[in-house]
Length: 196
Image (cartoon, rainbow, N blue to C red; front, side, top):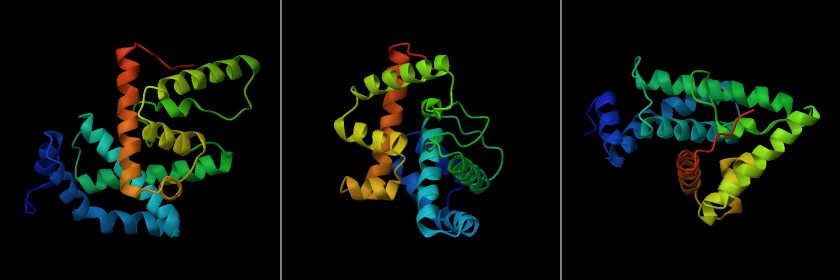
């Protein structure tokens, strides 16, 4: 299986073969981590962005939204590059970490959490959205609720969440991934639209 092309591994993973993803990650983890590290020059930040990038890759592949426009690694690097830009842009604005990484992707429900420099109407809408999100979170298993709150509302890194919940980074990543998938299902099943 290790000799298979990226596109055949992606197809296998999309058909439910988790081992195919493990091979893909193993194939590119050093190259992708190095790419990220030499842009940020910070080991903890590089680890966080690497985990974020693979979470985004996993969700995109699982949702069947990956369009092969070239090599898988170039796509993975583009995601990582955009996450790095997002990190510094958001750090400059002092706002929460976003789940969205590049323009042509659907918005993240967590992009709706904004700074409090809004007018009264916007603030009321934001409060309603946050209230709806918290209500939807109650439908998730407790461990998924916890990681979502820590990641998107408190802005903790995956490493910090792993330490706080006494879990591995991979377990934390998995919980966030499944929580986001479950939230999307809840929104679809209940016809919930979060928008401004």
